[in-house]
Image 1 (cartoon, one colour):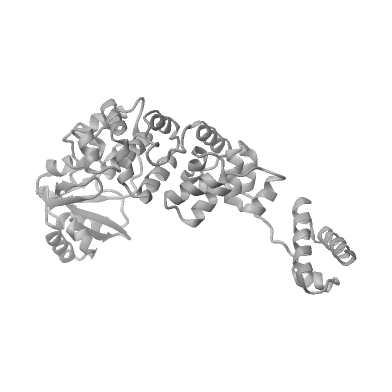
Image 2 (image 1 turned 180 degrees about the vertical axis):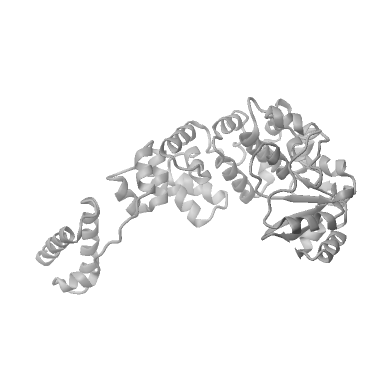
Length: 397
């Protein structure tokens, strides 16, 4: 029998025990499910604790409140069977067992059930359908998820094409989970289904595509996964600009050499042509924020002058992006730890040195700042000499 440690680490184990008791965990009324079970079995640190229960959401809410625990609900959450329970400073989602009545590739209409296997059958991958007894830690596995977890295999439950038809985002989730947990080649049937149904991605909102892709790219090493997606034509329907993983591979190597953490948006820039207009167009299509689109565009530029001058001009984050994309890990590491100085002069300082208020002040100030940057952010005495020379030139112009 496979077991997981119980209870999971929370700030208030007594409150967690009350939650389990309120949901009749001793009589299989509640189990830990999904990612917490999967990650715990792999020796990873789970980010969330999710609980499933046989009780209808209103009944679960009443039982939990009666146990003295804080609960938050929303009409949408109740309709889909989910309540939030406050335990030790964190929120644990409690979801009633469900089965799908109808799906359209984006949304599902559900009915509640008391059958654990029926609930597990509606999940995406075998490794995500594991559940665990909250008192004994016994793991329940209906679809071979334990074997798949041990083998580093990400596999759809049941017919892969049917599962994708139920929720088109599962295509991207398949590759993200493969990049995180997979070993060797992708599961053939699951991969073939993703390739066959790649055009289903066109029905998804671009925000959902962007969120899933950035998560995938932010994993430690997604290069082989992206290459598999390219080989299967997965990007063609929604981001045809992505045609090679070569720059991504070089970027991952540069990040490692620099000791800089992976960044999904930076890696997206590596997948796109190094052209500002293209980056902006893709960013707009994916409904990225203005700041994210600007960052994609800034990543496309070249490197003129010192790495510090670059960081001063476009910001530290974008300078690190550009330096890594140009294969300059040492410079990127330096800039990441460098604090850009503040330009110490103002227009008033130049007026005090003899300039007449007007456009000439701003123009001269910009010229002085540029010379200060090119000189390596020199000290006050050297800057004063630059300023006096610039003021004299402006007065004699």
